[in-house]
Length: 177
Image (cartoon, rainbow, N blue to C red; front, side, top):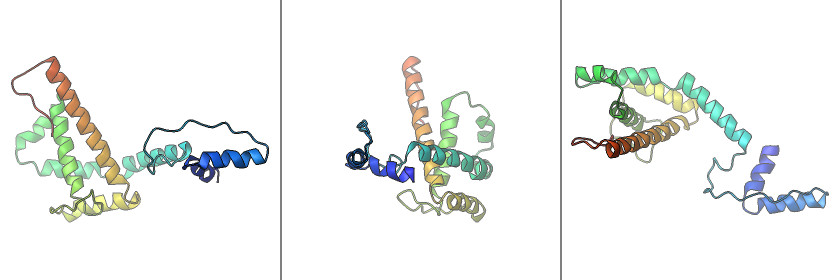
C-alpha cells in the first residue's frame, strides 16, 4: 500500500498533491528533491521494490540463467580447436571481449525475447528450450537485462583497451567489438 502511495508521489505534481493532502490532516511533509533522471519503469519503483527486484533478478540469474549450457554451446561450436585453449589465457581483455560478443550473438538469436529485431538465425532447439525457460521465469525481463549487462561489460572492455593503448601504444591494438 505504501509503495503505491509513494509511487504516486513520485509522479508529476504527485509530491505536491500528497503534501497538500497530508497538511489537511495536520502532517507537514517537506518538499523533496527532484530527480534529474529520465522517468522509466525503474525510476517509478520505490527503493524497497527496486532492491527486491535486484535480489530476485540476482537469484534467478544464479539459478535459472543457462550459463553452463551457453558455455558448452559456444565451446562446441568453435571453428578452431586452439580457440578453446586460448580461452584459458584471459590475462587480456581481448579474450573476455570475444566471449562476451559470442554470448551476445547467441542471446540475440533467442526467439522468446526480441531485442528490437528478430534474428534470421535459429538456435538449436535444445539451446532455445533453456533460453525460453529463462525468459518465461523472468517474464521476459531476464535476457534483455543480461544483454544490457553484457553490453555494459563490452563497453568497459573497450574502454579498458583504449586506456591501455594510450598508456602503452602498440602497432596492432584493437577494439573488442
